[in-house]
Figure (cartoon, rainbow, N blue to C red):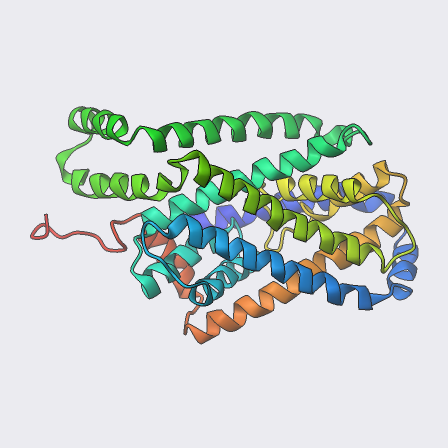
Length: 342
């Protein structure tokens, strides 16, 4: 079985498990009634606020890339949208790779460096999600099914952040350590590639080299996710229930932590089941919570996917570029070196 087929099978399997857990407790006719009576005009301001957050996300990436190349936001925004398109239609967050691939093609920034900034983005996003969860905990218990998951992710993300910050603050030491390790354990036939990837990696983590940079990235991440929570709040008003903004922060945190798991494209199941269970913990009826979560999921997925698809088409990309992006991510600057080049 090909690797990509195995990945798809795993993703669809995990989504199926989440959906299987969800469906037995739902009365689909009541979910349909809630959907039929919703006031969908509330989605409009929600989408507008979401794109404000997307602009902030673009600025954050611009800030992290500025030591590699200062890229105007107008040129970077389409690349971010293409990344969302890739994440939403392709499994295993392929959008993270495709946006680095497009950035290399348009701005000549090495993929190893830009992918490192993407990893840092995901770490800070995870930390903000955990912040949202812990802020809401005094006001409502976290659903029992997710407690251990949150604890494990907390440890992993804090540890990853500490490691990246330490590595960014000690580039000379990291270079000596890599040189010692590579000289003794890596075959000379691959040293050219690994040396270049290591240097690009160090360039990518330079955005964590100062407390000011770390603070700017973290504060921007908070703003990005607050804007998404505001969208949750707007869409809530389309339905006959109300929970606190902190409850929606908790929901946002849990569903986005859950979507780090492999799933079917569009985070089917991994978004919906945790969202519904979180609202049920706050006293919202399960069927009403399911209707709200379904509309929220569509409202989050469709607009940015449509915009990303348009930019994807405008850049004359094809489905084959997803495979090309994954292949280039494993090479030096998107090409394999020949013997003469070595």
